[in-house]
Length: 231
Image 1 (spheres, one colour):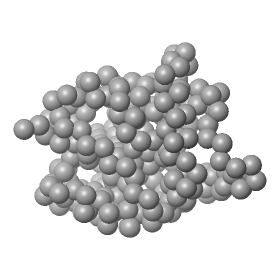
Image 2: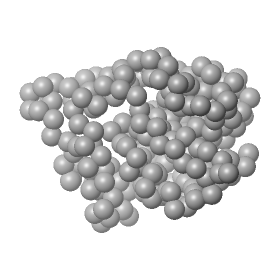
Image 3: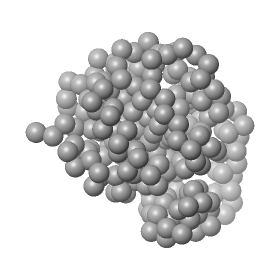
Image 4: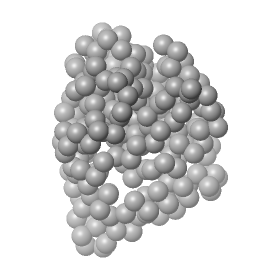
């Protein structure tokens, strides 16, 4: 029987986020769990508790899903075997970022929900991947298909992040972070804490700007996941 890994996607991403990593991880049962439709993280956890049937789980989250996975781990540590966060930090909401995101709501109210333009989606991937039309189209399609209601719900939830760093440090389980060193979307204050505070977590930066790591560098990520599963 294959060991199971639960996968939680990020803001405006769905099961297609894992499409390029699945071929490298065939020895595991990968179970995609959509982000529950709620703006309240405690309510999200209540839904997840009912979904996870096993006594202890391996949980991997990307971006917003990484924060949700870490929130689950600090709330229900007895239910978690291992935690892996991809392009995510356990940091709190930053005021400047919250204001920028609120402005997006104003634009939607005024102009309607238009999804991501090709150029915007292209700007989100690393230079060496900007000719990968399939990749850019996948990012666009996920965003558009999830739609306005999901966008507003997920973005609103990000205003309510609390800092989970101290709680994570106290957990006695393998916790891994994998992120791009020049990812503009990540909370730089939380990254700084990784470097300055003593902890037993495994922090693995990669050179580059990629946020959509599961789609852009699936092979490298899969190797890290295999190491994590053996830890």
